[in-house]
Image 1: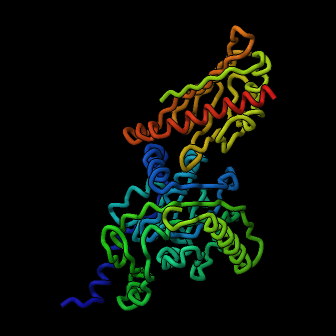
Image 2: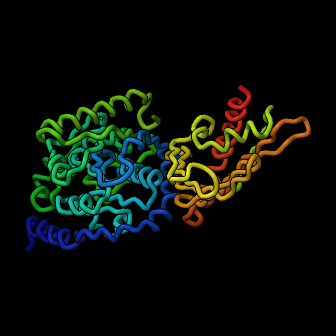
Image 3: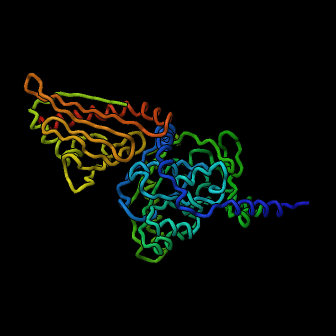
Length: 277
Length: 144
């Protein structure tokens, strides 16, 4: 009889075998252009999004965009920023986003690859930057995106700062992208790291969290693997001044965190109510 | 979608043309402008290119435009090269009282089929307000 460990190992093999090799040509500017009106409607009417400071992103060449991440497995900040970037610089400017293995390997999310979403690892990130593209990363990843909703205005990468080495190796500057609102799209209760450890999902699936939340349409939502319907929370994003990678990793990381937290505090200060903004 | 707004300015056409023909003046009268950059060696006239974005809805909308008509003291017209399909025109004509009637017209069409059509319809009120406010700013600028 199959044990829980066998099932998890089988699941791991299934996921790993489905993680596509990064092929930058899978990004399809014509497809993105056709999708922009739909995402514009969603961003403008449902999320009432507001994106400021796009002019701070270098007008050409590779750049590493580092953001704080919110909203569980349905993060509105990612698609709002992707829409804004593609509208501002045109779909012609190469732009990629790193995402968790589970996101890029899920069959219903295959369309994301056409938007330039590639599996989050150092090789894919270097491939994108070396090709001259802009790259969006969320170092906090699944750790940050499932933080409790009452910590919604706290930037927390969980100590991850590999992105600094990535920027240094690629010789690019870091542009912080602060956002608020995403963590109000559901009521996130607990990261569920204890549950991930209990089920060995941290070892087998690189899942550090099996989060617990209250979300539509499920009510009590454990893992968020099937996603959820986000509440129509107002999303506000601020692109910040580029930061040069000219100190040791910890110093640069501290600068990025201070910049992001400052931006989040500013944006949060303008919010009067959760969800409504 | 085609949106048009008009106004009458208490000045002759040459005075108004001096402003609408100068790319450096656009940021000072065009409303909701997020980005205005000259993108060709040629600063003005037929063939000059600019990167233009207006804040429509949640994000900047626009792209690279090229001037296709530059009729001295009468018309300046442009088409969009990237971004949404776009045609624009600012037309100057004399009124019987020696003033200038200014017509600002934008025709645009988002890609994406039915969703593009819905987006066009929803954006039309904001685009209309942008055109009207732009003409008000132009009037203030010329008459001040």
